[in-house]
Structure formats: C-alpha cells, structure tokens
Length: 280
Image 1 (cartoon, rainbow, N blue to C red):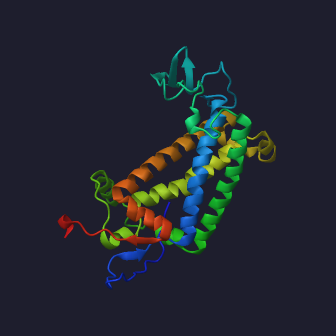
Image 2: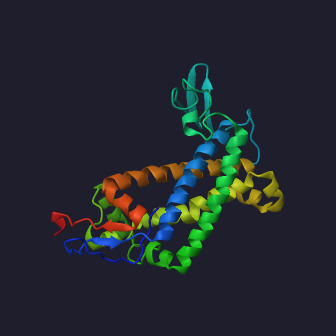
Image 3: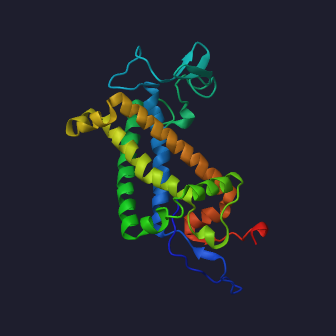
C-alpha cells in the first residue's frame, strides 16, 4: 500500500509545475512490495496447509466427526463448499477440479502440488518476513510522522456525515482530484489502518496460537482466542480479509488510473488528476 510523503512539485520540460508531486516515500514503497509478495506467498502456502484438513471449527477441538462451520470438499464427482447449513456446488473451482481432488486447486497453492511439509516451510519463513516488516514499518511510521500525518483520520474525517459522503462518492466512482488527491481519503485510511493494526497482528497471533511449541511459551494465547481450533478459524477469516482487501485495492487502482498509481508506487511521483468539469 502506498503512503504520502510531503508533496514536492517538479518542473517538466515546458516549465509546467502544477500537478506532478512526490507522493510516496521510498521506505513506504519498499514496504509495499515486500508486504505484497509476502502476503501472496502466505496466502498460497496457507492454502496448501489448509488442504491437509479443509474443515474449520470453533473451540478447542476439531476432527472429522466434529461439527465444522466451514467445509470444502467433494462428494463423488461433485465439489462443494458448506458454510453452516448452507451448501453450494463448486465443482471445477473448489473441492474438485479436473486437475486435483484437493479443496483448493494447485494453481492457487505454493508449492504447485500437495506437500504439507514444503507448504509449512514457505509459510513459516514468510511469517517471519511479515512480522519483521510490520515492526519496521510501524517504527518508521511513528518516527517519520507518516502515521499521525497521513493515516490517522482528522476530527472532520471521523464525522459520520463525512464518512457517508466519502462512501457515496466512491459508489459513484468520483475520486478526489487536484490537491485533494495528494492525501488519502477516509476510506483508504480506515482500510490501511485496519490491515496494519488489526489484520496483520491478528494473523500473526493466531498463527502463533496454532503452534504447540509457542503454546508452551505463551499459554495465554489459547485463552485469548478460545482454543487452537478457534484460532485456526480466525486465521482463515483474516486470510479471507486479505483477499478482499487485495481485490478492492486492485479494483480501485484500475478505476483511479493504473499508470499513474503504478508510477507513484514505483517511483514516488504522482500526477494529480485534473478537477472534474462539474466541480468547477
């Protein structure tokens, strides 16, 4: 995810300095790409681990004959997903495909075949990358004032009327233009803060809760999350949250102008969108 450094205008070959600004600081760009790669690897290696037992439970215990709130599986020549009492057929996508009888097909897993041992190695290594990069980014954000300046909502932005207006503008695909595009809008701030301070910490802590070795060192984690199976379910829901965030994030990039957004996150430079005619 990108972040905003203090804006600096540049002159182009014609001496025009009106709309090109330095928006994304180098440490944030580095963290964005490390985090993006890390999340994708963890989602795909986590899918391999999930394939070992594609059922989720609440509480301390869970096995094949216990009640599962989520099941991805196959029945004869049919793949299905069951959520509580609701079930849908997913043949060819989940549960059963022409290439695999695993819950999640190999196209979406690391490695691209079923190996629980290799999946765990990938997952655990990048879990350390995720945790260390998060700590580094939070420390940078605090001391550079990126957190207080760019991510924390202002008193005006915290008003329900302001948030509702922002939601309606996004629903109409009316994105900020001109000087307003230098800063994150309230929905972006809420999404980014949610990922940094809710999703990533939760996925790290629930992952720790599923480790018997770490249970011995931090037994309070089992009490905090209500048991290893509940922690596994929350871990899965966090992964689903990451998937939703990625899809929405990529959709917003496409709608806002992919070339301009990619330039910002690759080089730091961003061309401010021209104000709409109906806003003049």
